[in-house]
Length: 211
Length: 211
Image (cartoon, rainbow over all chains, first blue to last red):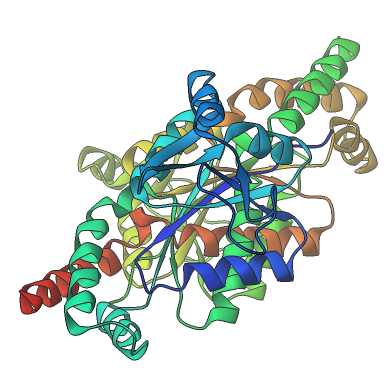
């Protein structure tokens, strides 16, 4: 009996390398699918419906909200952005492990709707390394770096809400680490319901036969 | 900053192959230590104090109980058997992952005293395979096999109390699987307290510097 895929939420400090990590996971293994967001903003050149985003209008999006069709959503610059439930559920049912890259507030909302989701928090090995990466980008002013570090300090308060803390030091190792965490999570009883049900029924049958 | 080892409780159906699994884990990797039980029964030939068992007398054992020195214990054929806390804590402090092979009632007691312990339940791939293994031993009467299956049926009711369900099909794979579950568990926030504390303090320091 096939078990459903796992909904994987990936959060982490800005500068922790979440984006690259997710890209590598999708490239290296074939059990992952990336959640596609829905938005009311217009498509930019090259963006395809169902790939970069699901594009819709305001009425369409609000219909989804009203029908409890969004896992989480927010408004930004007058446009809606969110995660449609249908796509995620479809992928999970097909056995795919669906990755959702969102921040902590969203993550906690998702956890409430999907208690069996797996919450990963990505962090560099130290705060000093985080600073080094942010400064190293060379594109951020000292002020922006300071803001990010201050935001990271706030975010670190919520870290216990996550199931696992993944240290992204060497990318390649980190990709393997996440993959083996997901594999381990598959062995949790909440994700082995079909197996448990089956072996229980079988054992009951055998016990009956024995008496 | 070094983190403590993990207390690993291994339970499972009789015939699931727990003993061999534990032996292979200890042989293959060097992060594990096996918990040594304490008993009031006399040493058999070849048994060494501190290796097979810690040997003591009734008064010594009851002193341990009174001092809350036992993680779990039981009486069997007029002798005490139990798991001394001191040895386990010493090994954990030294960074060793300590394996305790006990059944569900004991496992739940340990979980209460050590909420950060990791509970693994070992099972063959199916009830049919369990029966095959029990019959295959050739040493058990049909009646004993039936009793074991009936007991397995009862035990299967408690399976959700465990953190992970490990299917022991091919031993070698199962050993690797358990090892990677333990590795994943090391990344849980309850087992990364030192890391969290450190990065939080550092981030706070950086944020202060930024303002």
